[in-house]
Image (cartoon, rainbow, N blue to C red; front, side, top):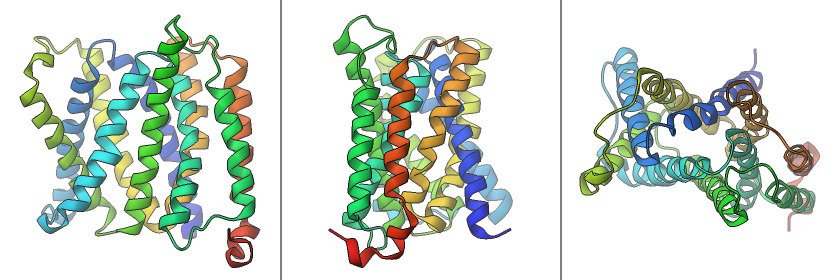
Amino acid sequence: MNAYTINWILLLLLSAIWGGAFTLNKYALEAYSPEILVTGRLLVASLALILIVLVIFKKVKVHPSDWKYYLFMSIVGIVAPFLLISYGQLGIDSSLAGILMSTMPISTLILSHFFLDDERMTKTKLIGFLIAFIGIVILIMPGKNTLHTSLLDGLSSELMVISGAILYSFAAVYGKRFKITDPLNASTGVTLYSAVIMLIYLIFNPNIIPNEFGDMSHLSAVLILGIFCTAIATIIYFQILQSSGATFISMMNYLIPVWAILFGVIFFNENTVWNYFIGLLIIIFGIQLSQNKENSRKPKTTAI
């Protein structure tokens, strides 16, 4: 089995894990605030990653000299998007939140053009981007896809999730451009920094710490989010990112909505509306056009 096939298998696995994360996140938010949920998730993930690293390498290799990398990736790639998506999910269904993540490849294409020499924008990529943008507009059209009756409330929730997706794009491009270590230690360092940032935030905001920590089912959701949807998923993420690049890993966000819709319907009886599917199909078509292999083979003849 070649590396390309392995990366696609890992991409499918990662999309399923993160697609399910939206459902678990939605459920956990019934008992916890976004800040407590994100902190608990990161603490569990940090502990899991440290144990995994100790088993494999016997010691944690997080070098203090790489603090700028870890700080950027933790804030832009984990803490900020985790909080934005969690706050967004207070106002929209988990299935729609997953669908909105399909906007990430668009911002990744743009950022990659300016910051990654081997992932330049082409004319066909630009056309694909414009088509995908139309899909985004359709996707956030008002309908029965929000939990609030106010259009402004629903739109603000959608924009929070989209902002989280854009931050993921920044992190993907930065992580590809400034690769510093192996995927496992990179995952551990970034997650540890993220957990520390959230703990510092809670120290200065003790009023949001609850007196009770929910029932076993909600605690289990946080444990699953930490171990599988953060620790293991982050290892897979860095493996794909370092071997295949930012644009390839952004393709995962075509698959996340499928899983998010499936899990949302099964566990929350969420309803889907017409603009979910039409918007998603247009986005997929636009990004698929932009990923045309012919353009990637001859970037110099069509670069803009």
